[in-house]
Image (cartoon, rainbow, N blue to C red; front, side, top):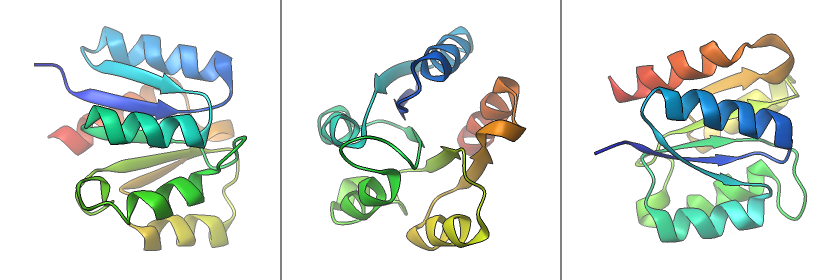
Length: 124
């Protein structure tokens, strides 16, 4: 059975690109365009991994992670999260790591293959 990934990303072009690449690698990918929609998807869907943007409408990535940590089956110690963000500010990376993420990618510095590699690393 394919591993299920929830991609929470408000940049439509990037979301579509990552979805297509991940599906070609055999993953099932659900896309949410804001944090609120993403959190609802997580509660319903029981994914194997979350790819999460930080700056989004309605609810940002940090708020999503804080809410996830309040729900035992979505806790970041249980459900791996890789942050994909425009910001590489050390304070943000540090905050995300403290919340329990597995990895952090800066959008301006990665190519989609790097996302695939990090996702595969989580499942090895």
